[in-house]
Image (cartoon, rainbow, N blue to C red; front, side, top):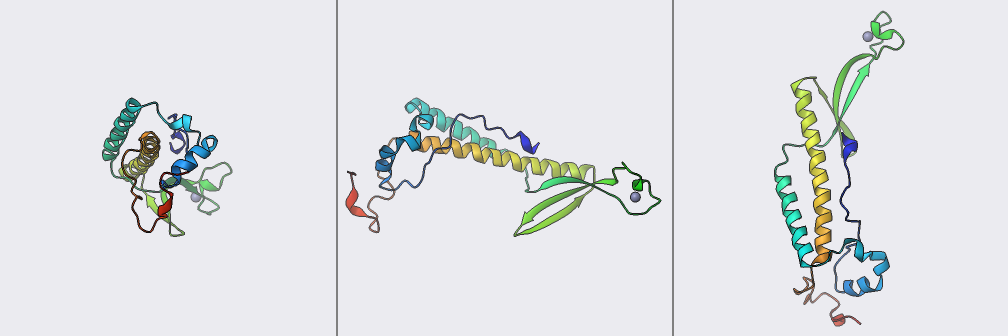
Length: 172
Ligand SMILES: [Zn+2]
């Protein structure tokens, strides 16, 4: 299930960097690196389409159910008693027992789960987290494409910032 994340969108990874005042110049100087044509859409229609897609993705994110980080592992173990059936070669061992593990602050936290509703609930929650992560990736790509497509019409947030390097307005 975790391996099923597919990157099917055509938007490539494109450097968006920090959109400071020098950005436009850097943009024109290194178009090979930026691969502009791969991600920049063709016009206002494309921009509107991207914004529509973004709204869809945000709406879908709002429909994601309870989620949690972690991974579910099936664990079987041999009890060590020589007379137990599990001592026979090829016996898979007792279980399965299901563990929900999660790394947090360098430590791995493990929660044991009983098969049945408890396990199914956790399975769902973990899957919803993957879905959420996938949506975050998609909405990030769409946002980056929107950034590339958005024409420069408004004053840049950095403009007029007295702490900036004010002398370079207009570039070259
Ligand atoms: Zn045993």
